[in-house]
Image (spheres, rainbow, N blue to C red):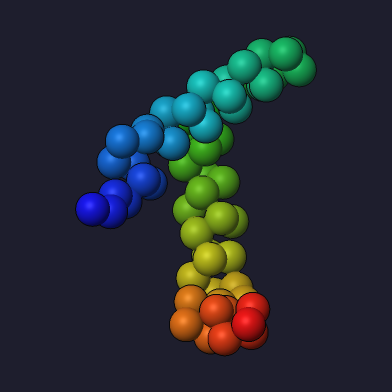
Length: 65
């Protein structure tokens, strides 16, 4: 049995938003954490995964041998 752990048993997004909220508060910033996360994820993180250096898992395993 396998699990897709991203968003299935573990809610990563809510955890990240909570962390960002605490971090921004600790810095005295009055920024909406959900908006910050959405802008960061769609503007930076997701494009880096989609367009960034990509290697099929099979190829990665071949290099690790």
